Length: 570
Ligand code: AMP
Image 1: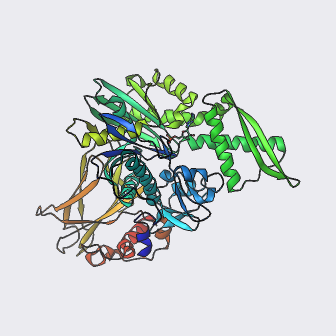
Image 2: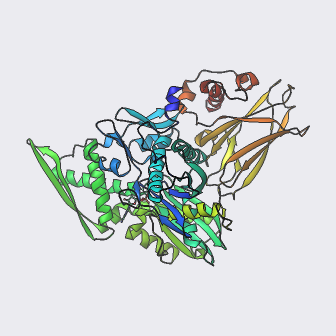
Image 3: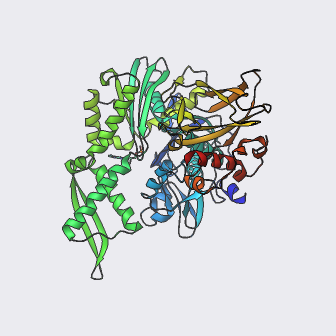
């Protein structure tokens, strides 16, 4: 219990905003980015990016612990990334809200220098400098850092925010961001999708009616969204993306190139520990960024190895054309996603009237060239790729506090459905359904005297439920014992405009409302499924379920669920 509590709040040594500031009505707009985060507020009707206390317009999304065990956040944490990479957490946005035991986390963890560990049921955490942080806690520290900057800059206590997330985030990832807000003591009044925020910054109060494509290639993720913008209505027509495609993949290609060149020219493999790996990543990223402006970049790696007891330097050159050859297929993938998004909304490339480029990686000339070629037009100028999302979030925040006419109409990024008794996934909401949305499903008891029915919800596109992301389990109770099949219920699922799910149920025969309770939000680990003890089917009877207060220990709460999943997966 004590351990759980440790993750429910900021670490004791986190520096909070000054306590004596007057309470503010302002709502911040926060772009919680993979590599950098940005915060803006609307003043005199214009979004204004709030600089960090060090004068920077963005803050590195990095948390670290130094050799003395001190907590570092933002710029200070970034400074130690090169010298102490195993104690420095970056890229948290790629882990947050994921199941520790998922394939995605297994793959991702290999690319990071800090130890990624399981926390609680199956959340992801990191162990740096002997201190353990949950991923929502890491994001909370970054949110807190941004809030501190705003409070100090405005001399007001701002505690509410609109926070942006990738459109392609699952429900679990969104919930983890909300949790990060709670940990940081920030009231997240709304979660907004990044492309919608970008479109808002571009199209608010402009009198046009057009289809806008937002192409967002950031540090770790790629999102493409097609929106219709008219009279301050921002209607997402379709969205798609790849949470495993971003600037870091471009860096990795350059890193592989450096390593293969080293082997070719030096006749041996470069021995890499975590510090050298981090230095290579850094050099690769710098060369990549350099090549957005120049045709050739020199990569210098001083003291990279030891030969005959002496430090040895290594340097090489990389040409823009070589970088383009190394990364061309990554850009192909983004174009494929754009095609999928257009297909999903029945549009053609020529229907798109403006293309917005968002995310630092879109500064690469080949990205601009390929996007221009695909859509037959140059992307819109005048949108700052690093700041546009925070500005859009701030404009949204401002509209919430006024009687503005801004309307956001979003879509569900991935299908949501339930598991059928044979393990198949039954879609209840299709990907790209307009929100809010509702769905209805009929269920019946499958054994005599059954007193509860469990509904297991997943998100994804696989036909097998277990291959999708587990969202949660609901239990419906409140009906009398009867022979199997006699109790028939109508389950209603409603997704609000922020895709928060509400489930209600009623008896088909009497029309009476039933009691519905969520029993699990955390995903169930494959490992636990494999090792959990067989529990009788009667785990779905009322006695083994938590009471209304939900006070039973978490392990009990999940036990029925695990056995149920095990039975279906074997
Ligand atoms: P973001 O998540 O939007 O902050 O994007 C960060 C990514 O953009 C990182 O992978 C950076 O290496 C990349 N990036 C930033 N500036 C440039 C540039 N001028 N050319 C190419 N990539 C860049």
